[in-house]
Image 1 (tube, rainbow, N blue to C red):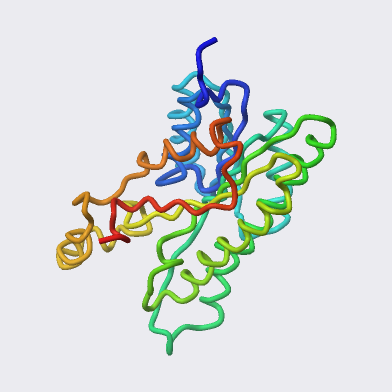
Image 2 (image 1 turned 120 degrees about the vertical axis):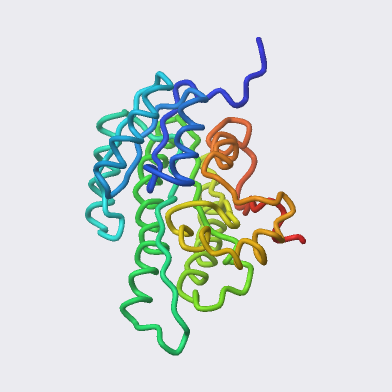
Length: 259
């Protein structure tokens, strides 16, 4: 038999914030590798466009309108994803928001907006996916993968982005605790730390010549990252190739952090 560790045929994945950027890059990689995929996003037009791209890979695909800052919406969306696709083997908590300001000018409202989406919603998403994965394991069908999109801001100094950096560091601790707790069920938990990626969140910076010169000029790969740069890591963590890989944080930043 041929060795095909990255074949995702028969597996089902959920990707929050999966209608653009890193999330869509991950979702497309999963579909291309054979997985059925449900993406969650708030924008109906972006959901529809992403859904067409996923269906072009010949797999089942669903797009759900979900605001992950609403706990009840997360609970309902996970149940709906299960109802539509039958199981969940991989859950990627990718949805996130930015929004920075000088520390002395940041409001509690700004802090709460970022922490709710980037930290609370990851907890809710992981919790609901884990309920299904643990129940499956107890019936003899062990295995599952939880993956979160963190950021190199978790390990760098991120001026004027204390809330964002705190949430991205917080999910690393969440991943480690989850990895240890759920390992007995064959469930892994890991994090991906993107660097400077060309997404809607960084649109202003992409047009800033000085930033491109000073920051992107320091990236050894000499370019912005793209959503498709995350297809491979998503497939790896969703696949049977990573069944002994858990509690880890993988940096994907074109070498920026080590230069």
